[in-house]
Length: 238
Image (cartoon, rainbow, N blue to C red; front, side, top):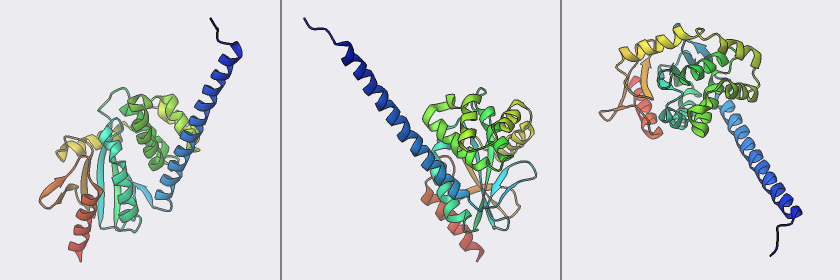
């Protein structure tokens, strides 16, 4: 009978460790590439906050605003980011529309409020949109367990934010409670019952449901449908 040689065992362990380290490098490089792409989407776009606390991206004089209601614990909201980012590239960047994001925080009492506050706190460092994408990416990878303060701190560090300032903001649990409640009140008044919810605001008017060929666009939305709906809205103004 033969026994495993100790050296063989050590070599096997080293091979596994090296493989894991290689995988981590690949994952980290992919995330850095993703972060760089997201930063380029928002580069040089106007960032502002509505009077009731909602972040808005794009030309203040654009005729229409895409208003989206989301919760960071909502998987469909995370899945909808590809549609939203394409909309930003094709409509917000050319100045034809704005994008307004309304954060809700009721799906998971343990994670939703902290994630929403993290994004709004990052906004104090002009990084709301970057933090939003990073949080949704984390949710896609790790689920709701991604939204611990330790993980959020790691994300903030990766985005080159002042972690101390962000942590101080997160520790003030009521800092953005009024902003989030404003979003809840607006969602209820609009009859929103599922997420993500997409609406359109014309000028400074009240948001309304987006329709295409007689049907309402909401929930997980195909980009082609959203683009056609806004193309039709823009054409109707001419």
